[in-house]
Length: 337
Image 1 (cartoon, rainbow, N blue to C red):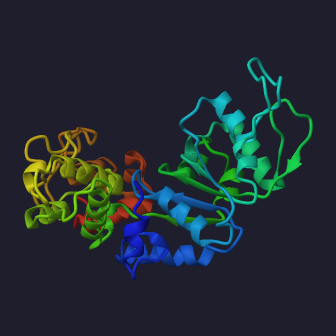
Image 2 (image 1 turned 180 degrees about the vertical axis):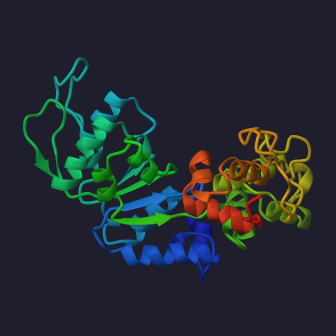
Image 3 (image 1 turned 90 degrees about the vertical axis):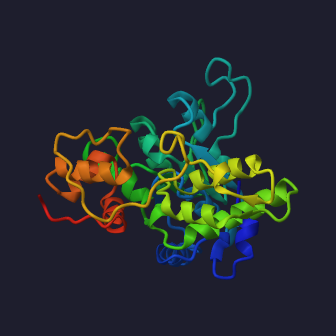
């Protein structure tokens, strides 16, 4: 589901994106800087933070808006198939290639190619992608000749590419080629004041789509939405409200039809307010235990790493900035125990 229509009704939200928190205003500022350049862009952030929406906004409001916007998820296809999808192939290139096939780079010529989950790209394809980006030319499988293309690449990942470079899982030269202009998208929990704006926009869009005018959230639901930590970010919020509108028998969405992720809140669907005091958690606590809430899991990881943020971030698969967000918003005292 897109939220462009709803967002355009909000004068404070540029680029058809919803949110006016300080962190999103910083994202808007970065978009404005890179919008009309030719620099490649690397979008980072947790799953569900809206990386594809930002990529589409850059296309829609940039100078290539009349040209193609092509999306390829690098984690969705086997290695061999992904190569042929990216670069195309000639008839007879392999068994079953009974016709010429246009690759994603050719399909996006003069426009933008959005490479989602770039961190899952195999090393062999990383080398081939690097050459395409350096030379702006591509050679389909089975062809002997390269041909020129004009494609701007926006890549996205929820993984820490810097750590993958250090471990040899991702090429450093490709990383620097992709990350001409990095933009990190904040987790929903860190976007102060944006949850209800997003929730109301989603409700309006769903009501319009399903021809159910007058849908609105009860005060109890609004309070619960603001208490919940949304580990799945904006995508989880959207899915939560999609289900709630289906279950609601009236125009008022009340707390009895709003359920968060089943593994998180199986009974009531609501999280209790997060305590601000720092609980004592032993160093032998398993930080991967699904029974721990996010704050407890973060503290357990910090305990295990001697309260060194960078080590805990690596342990949890976060960037240093992401773990800093959580430490700040969860009011965790970083005094070592």
